[in-house]
Length: 104
Image 1 (cartoon, rainbow, N blue to C red):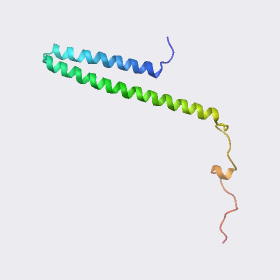
Image 2: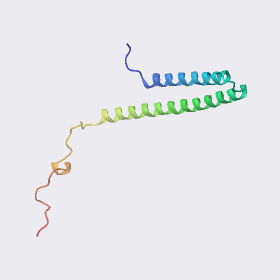
Image 3: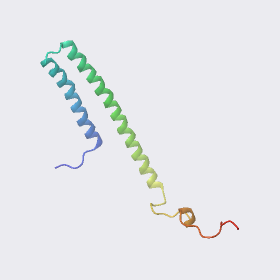
Image 4: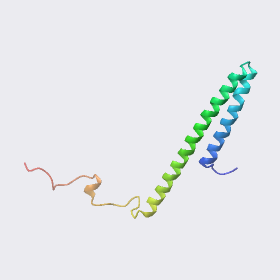
């Protein structure tokens, strides 16, 4: 068994299924008696939708890769770890004792 698939492998699989559908749907339509013009129009419409979805999917993958790269760059330059304390307990939302109580 192979390891986990990358997003680009997943998108390639989606595109393959879309192309298969673009071929299969008009064939089925012709089989059931739809005109050649109707089946051709359907094929062209499906191909257009597939092309737009492929472009959007590719842009999404590029954006995700950019975000991962930015996160890695930010994490490697950051000096503070996940549990680094930035100041006193008063800044962390704990209970405040005395100090700023109103005078009665």
